[in-house]
Image 1 (cartoon, rainbow, N blue to C red):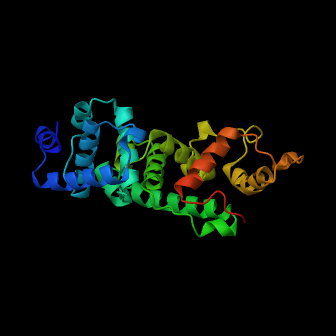
Image 2: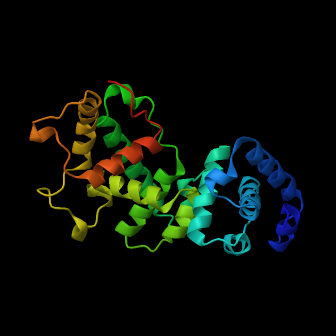
Image 3: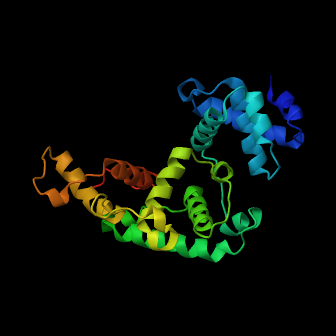
Length: 253
């Protein structure tokens, strides 16, 4: 089934097809779909969705997923892979989220919380890495908004947020964990408060990460227990967040 036929089945306007065909051509030129694990029909549907997003045309994702022949999880993963591969940026605005989800009063709270997260995350990084940190990725805005909604006991569809920011559930979850822990005083829910004796804070993980990596690069092992990272899951979260921020993990201090 070609893009034109799929477009008609999805009820999309004809002018959108040209943009979708352009994206399809670019993906054929620059990306290997077999490596990404994306079938031709799925690729066509994704190109239509990306074109619809670009041109601000409503797109029925559930129908698109049905036509692609894939599960929702597999489609989302393929969508993110193709979107990132083509460099198509998704812009998420806090005000638009507030209006769309009917939570306008969360706008200033989200802005405050996101600003605090940036400040604390950057403060824990060595100076050489601060300049490259980029918090403009939509997932950071979406997670801050979701955490504010949860804190204020307002229901927000997490899956819809993940779809809007063009990320994966694992990336959303990692940023969620990092942001919730680093800014617990703003986003946290009391019943979820962690035992400080069992889990190191993410600020400590950030502080120890560069020295730990240096030890590993030198082939050495530290005998100082204060320099070790017991929370391996936390370390993975920080590494993923730093990757999302565009920070070079191999850059020396």
